[in-house]
Length: 504
Image (cartoon, rainbow, N blue to C red):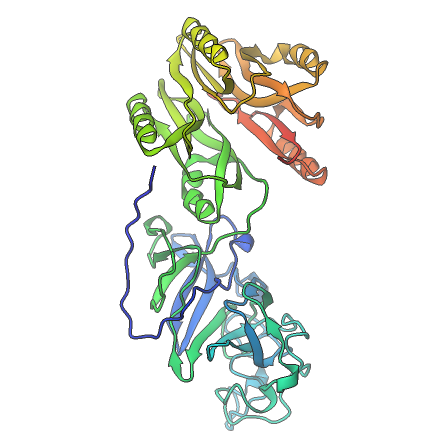
């Protein structure tokens, strides 16, 4: 299935670079509710990390310098090049709204011994273009990139807006360090002629400004509220925009789990993590007191995919038909109850696997389906269960690329889990799928057992604090999240079943 994207292009008289640049900030260091605000002002592009809180956008939690959300964020080179001018040890301004006395702003002569750009780098590229990185944190630029160790200039300038690539700022030709695109070159500070922590950028060739053209990430036109942001992939567009928000991609990791995540938050971050190169695996949607939450582990995507949340039965059928036509097959399916109605969460992957699947089955129908699957040598990929009117309603998926060597129990009471687990462990079979749910019989599990390495990390009675502790232990042991499932339809308490496994 192809996601159709509407692209908005801005025409500009600015010169466009020949290739895309790396965004100078990373999504790795942003909180879940933080974005990068981009604004053109005073000849620079100003980048600040902002959150929407208290009905407005905020860039800091207090006037303390360190409480700016931008402060100490790593800065990365947008292009490869050589450092031709710099300063690295100028003091940061004491707090938001105040300036260092050495800037000379409070004296009649206005002499300054600090550059208006504070700690900064000018990096020149092979095509003759240059980028200025301004207002960096004191001491954050590596000495290997900038040889100037002094805090203040030896000779005061007439104003803090003096030439920036000459005199004491210049780096002699033999000492010019080489940087690569994406290399960390410093951290955001509050040095120079700036009243709040931020990154200042200028991209130019000669005196002519250039438009940035980033390779990856999301952007939105500026909006008064977070809910009004309309995220679009950057996809190599040029950005001479006066004002916008950016959501830079984060680094791919083998296992990026989210537990107890409100469904709305999951849908909000999904485009960002998708743009970063992840896909959602072992997604589990569950409800507590009528509110819906997601457990999911994001992993590096290996194929094109598309996912859907909370589909009605009709929508589920329609997406299956469309997927088949477009060459996608069902990889994962999960069911949950919304006001007594079954809803489905699905993940499709671009391949031609002829799956066997059916939803809303009773036990007899499920037994017929699994007989059909065994006859075709298909293994169970998902068996999701809900109870309606005290009767099990089963949604199952069998795939030809799932091993047949497995056993499954879709209606296992948690009181019997230890006994069954011990029997399976005797032949070195452990959970490879968990679906936790609550019924009139109490807490129940749908479990698929299959051969895998024993990790001593299979548990079915965890609260949220326990879950976080187990995740930390698993990471320390070099494990990744297998699957986490919340007991669906719970009245007031988050409880989880989970297992961790060796990296695939």
